[in-house]
Image (tube, rainbow, N blue to C red):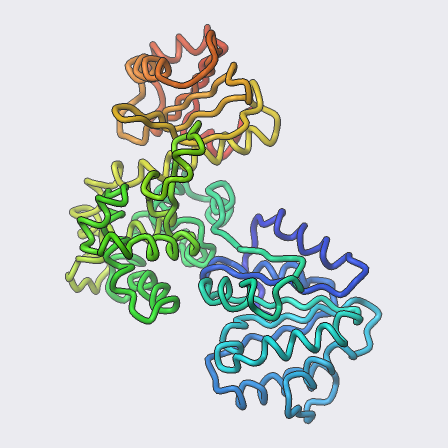
Length: 472
């Protein structure tokens, strides 16, 4: 296997190690959108273990079995060995003598299962009758999210209940992707995160000898840039006809948030919109949000809640590239296009991502026990005429954390604090609730606000540089 950069994923590795340490045979199903780092995670986990690793391709079943047989034969010390059935090849792997537990990895498993639908039933019978008694850990990994969710993990499917470890691999947080590019400033790293998100493959393409803007412009805006059409590749892999999904995602990228608004602007029939939105939610491409403190009535109402694109790269693509017919071939043309069509709108575009990064910071502080109290939940709050970027409280709602996140080209001042304090009066909290105010700012804070924070233990100011270094 090729050695690649690997950062983070401590929780995911811990889960896999727990499964490996089990006294019984284990099935683990790992899935997530392509490029998110599933293979790198499994490779990291397999280090120091006895493992077999096979990556399936979009081949016919007979040829796939031939290639799988070749790999099994080589692993078992007989490169000429071939198998006529899948169960025979899997049985040979499970029976291979080893002092350690054998980890059997089939990557891009969907290519095999799609071409041979009966394989899931065959594997279920083989597992129940033989493999479950072997000293193995079987990992099935796939990047076709909707297929794995429905055809492999669904309650009516043969393997349901056999896998004790089911892991959906998600994009990396801001603090982890920063480890890929340690030579850049925090502001530049955030600019990259707002355009690329937490997909490790995208960050491995960053050339540290060039500025972040030059990296982004050439990889995203240049017509032959490696990320210029990645968004459509992702959607084509998941959907036979992505046109409707494209319309919905572009509408949300331009600011539509409610179901009615999305239906009107995307021209998708409101009677079928819910189905499409549900699929995009399952794939972690969009998120449906409810205000913090929302009651059962709101949560149970399908028409309530607001939508946003979860993946920064997809949001960038649909905001700046989807309708851009310009053929850009040179680095200079890409830089010029960035300065003319992206840079003037970037602060507004990246504001949601900045809120998300600030939320990641507060969640890390919460787990580390570094907040003044432990909020039961953290999230956005809004009502008909007001909103607060981040709110959290304890269960009795006697202590409340409120935060405003300002990604703009000016220092944050007392006006922002006074506005936040005024909005707090509308929150559904206990009488005499104690507020802890947090202000996050890209450009820092003016002297008056710094002076106020120096004398107020309930006022916390966090610069963009501190987002990578949570305070003690």
